[in-house]
Image (cartoon, rainbow, N blue to C red; front, side, top):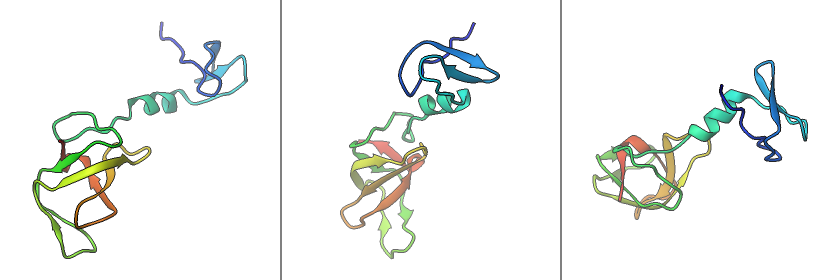
Amino acid sequence: MPTIPACPQCGMENTYLDGGNPVCADCGHEWSLSAAIAETDVVARDANGNPLAAGDTVVVIKDLKVKGSSIALKQGSVIRNIRLVDGDPEHIEGHSEKIKGLVLKTCFLRKA
């Protein structure tokens, strides 16, 4: 029997299913079960499958053209102190030495 997750609002375990949505008996909060599962499964991973976290340093694994700039991001370029994009595990934000405000796909990066 699958267990119903704790309430994301108050954290209490006293939850039940009403139709297809879990409901907290203590605070009355109702949420979508698929949204709760999607929030826990979102993990940004690099090209090798290593999990990425905010503040990590990554290396570009392929030459990339940067839209809006004549400067290309070369293979081996280091991106320090990355930020994860909320709700999108395929993109990160960061700065290189020459280009500020980059949004990069994680499939072109590896963890340093």
